[in-house]
Length: 111
Length: 121
Image (cartoon, rainbow over all chains, first blue to last red; front, side, top):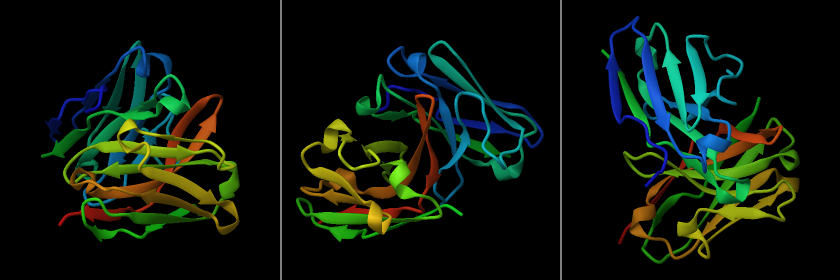
């Protein structure tokens, strides 16, 4: 089981602001950058945020990320029905050899 | 366009072996770390293994050490995962992912569509 925890589920109405938390330890989030991945139903994960708060090309600015200490946060402003998906945070351990740790995942339902 | 395409999944009995392949295109494979990530049905993501650009170094999640082997053939733009002594609980979709590293920070920037491995008698 992952040592990086997220709320299992959240729900929101279209247009609302959603905040997804990601809580780790000094062995992972506390000493590394955090990435976020979006997994739409039946598809592969997609990179959403990297280096705590940067968006890859093509990701709308409705998605933003931040990190403080051993926790990270993904914020979706003006959530849309197309954002209905699973969201995973992730980070490396002390080094690449320690391995990558994904958060437990959050299922976002847009009502 | 970066593309990763997995193949080789299927049904295997507990204790059996399977070899997954991942064909890469749209980028110079030899310049990137590559990884395998799996997802059991209805569950979260789990990092499985990563391999260095030259193939001379690799890392594994503890649960697969000694049973899984990640390898690559840069001339063929391909990544592999040899899985031995498979367990029922390792039934999952296995994803191939490119690892992008900059300034000491690495993340998975491209993913394949996944290959389903079912371990069952």
